[in-house]
Length: 638
Image 1 (tube, helix red, strand yellow):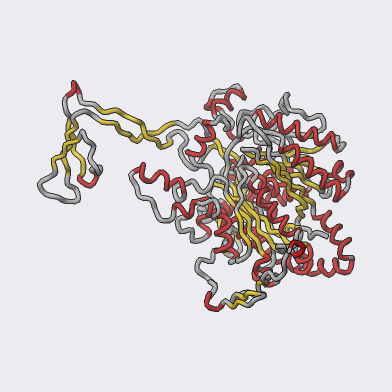
Image 2 (cartoon, one colour):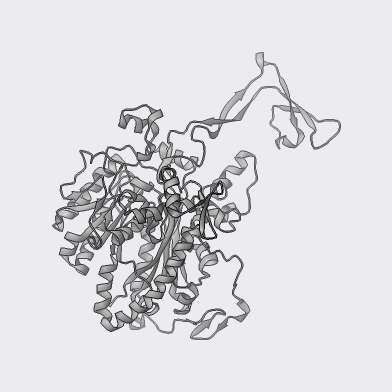
């Protein structure tokens, strides 16, 4: 029998805030929450955004006023709501994006012209048309006289107005770099460290305890970024440096690699020597990495896996690249949709999955989950938030356009639903499942994805399949997109509220939804109404993936059947301590203390103390040895 990959920890950050303990999900459905939970959500965001600090058992605002939680929520509610989710770009001035204008300089009437230039700024080698007279005395401010005979081509620093003006950004005031010694890390790496730490703390079991329970190579980390790190501290800065007259730093290239989200988690968060990987599949990257983790646990190769993706693409060059493709919602097109002038665009509603839309909205996000096999989770008393049975990946076949959709997503969706039917039964899938749609908010996606979902619903006799689309709230972060979907799904399991697509007035006329239920309001069905979530992702290049995720209620029934009532009762007793420790972290994080793990140069392995035998290898600091292969898996062929 396969081991069941269960979710024992989850965390991260996106435009809705902190993902652990469902804080980000609660921001998305905040209008539908009971008052107490709504207040807790707002207070947690207030500390994350540095609107208040927590000191000596009270909250304090910037003016030094002491506030209780109710007062914090009342005072900052509107500011918090306005400064989270999709909104006008804050990371840079979208009306004055730096650029260079090409210019052709020529002398008047063909005569040479002269100017002065600091000696240290003289280009090497000198242009052929330049004649230079050096100063008699050299100093740091010495000027050379330059005469140009025929003119030359140049670049003049300038600015331009970016047509795209909205993005899904981290809550205003929250900077992941503030929570550990970031050492000029790219923003994507900063997000990876803080998000993975959040997920690890959310488990409620000390990581050392988990690591000591398994062999060192039974731990895995699968994480990546799709676009690599393209801000000034990563590949973006490296590519720009010489063109801007600056130097390339020794950090930019290595920190820019798309493997860094996995590498930093291994080296500085977990100290893992287990398997590692960084798979990219465009917008389906999170599910590609999740598939590796799920398959490794099911096959018994790994017992603990950390899976995640990170992206920080709210950078003017990346936005301009997607805008040039016609993929993003521009201010001009949003204004046309709403019949207003550009000055009155509603940037909060720039992402409109399955509605009248004009393109997707880029965002930043980092999402991580911790998976264990069911036996280890029972043994350690881990709190189980759900399970992932399968992740299916298929390509599109021959294509006319790389960004265009194709046949692959029909396969992944049908496989995922069929696998769920095999596990929980047709009735459970018909009555208690829902879809987290890719829902990118492009005119093409709203039609093609709806056709796929409606066709699959018909094949499996699903009459009213609820469809949610998290990108309406937090935008499209590319690689971590399905991580956002997973966090929302875990929230649905916990609270029983299906986030509506509240950025649309109605479903677009060309959407095929005879068997789909697409609502523009939250649907409060109650806890236990939904037991299966299908996460769907359609990435550029034919990178399609769909995952089947199950609620804690379903998982508990499976564990009871596999282990029996006595063993489950023992597990439940151990789980109480785990929940207590996890709640303690949540309380601290909600007060602004994220306790980000960053062990730079700490607890390093003494390589001289490594011992190797013919059957095993022992590392200092690890409780168990690593067993070496001793059997021939191809014995029948020898």
